[in-house]
Amino acid sequence: MPPLLLITLLACALGAALLVLRYDLHEREPWWMLLLTAAVAFGAMALLGPVESATLRFLHPQPPWPAWLIAIVAGVQEESARFMLVCVIAVLVPRHFNDPMDGIVYGSIAGLGMAVEESISFVRGDAVSGMLLPGTEYVRLAGHLVLGGIATAGLGFVRVRGARALPAAVLSLGAAVVLHVLWDWVAFDQLLGGRRDWHTPAAAALMVAGFLLYGACVVRAEAASRALFARADCARSLHGWPFRAGTPRGR
Image 1: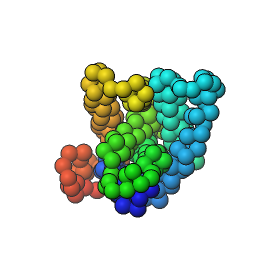
Image 2: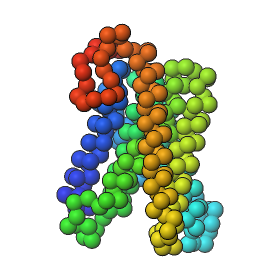
Image 3: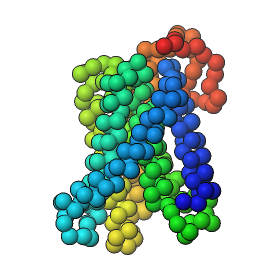
């Protein structure tokens, strides 16, 4: 992979991570936990490639594989992997997973780690050596971030509220899987069968739906986090940049 392309990709991923941290207002996560999450997710994505290929060969021994099957395998396995990674974090390091916002934060960072690995796998060779960053890679970073945050949003509430929040965890994971499968179906249907009139509006609708759902999860989790950790005079808010001065309760 060309060095300039790799540097640009990592810089974009870092910028996206900083935007995610903007939402972590009241009980902030240590940088090393976030870096570790991204690194483990990167490695998990590298392992998922062969696993997805093996699954496709098992389900459909004779290629070419239909777009809908590729989409289902990728969507289910990748979102499940993100979900399981954040579950492991919640179980092994509960001290750092004690905030309703933590599901979104760790899931989004895991999504970024997986996106970077996937981009490095897809963007290789001299054909892109003169490019700064192909447009599809921006979409990949944003897509994995958003889907990762949605998939694990409910886990933040489970950690705080217990079994009462399990339906939220199931719904958030299910929503991410559905969005991922539909997005990949549109993408692979276009790749394998050529562009059709419905591809562009379908992709646009899925992007809007994903960002709206992600935003709704962030707003709901921030409100619950504020109720748990913020002092009455805390001025930190989701609105505005930079944040106004405020003093959340410490760890």
